[in-house]
Amino acid sequence: MKHKITVINESEIKSKHKHIHDPYEYYKKEVTIDHNSDQCYVAFYEIPPMKSNYPYHYHEENTEVFYIIKGNGVLRTEDGPILIKAGDTIVSPPGKHGVHKITNTSQDNMLKYFEVDTTNSPDIVHYPDSDKLGIMKHNEVSSFYKNNAAIDYYDGE
Image: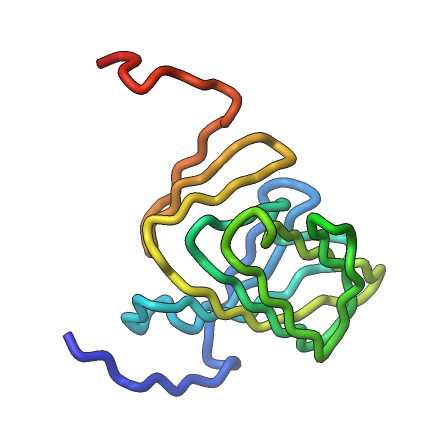
């Protein structure tokens, strides 16, 4: 199938809201989800005051790029917290040195950013705080597992 150029205005994209577990909440407008994009993922995110959208994590296979459109927050990294603000661009490379978490530190205002990710699939995502990992395949349901159970390669065979 041939891919075509996509032109879409943010105002035309339906926002998806997710708030299943405190302190995580976000609104997301996916640019590429319905446009047969298989090499990158593009979305707008808004994070409410004092919330994060995802836990502290890193990807083994994918780069994530964030451009802060409005608001202020903190980017948690392996080297410590970094204050972020409108106009900042963040590049999170694959691997443990790209571990990150974005939190809106405002009491009153949304933190809004534009995200572009590579979509190498499958990808393994590590969550150091909870000692779990996720196996993610582009445009499919993800699976999550605890890391703390080491077993032999032939266990159960």
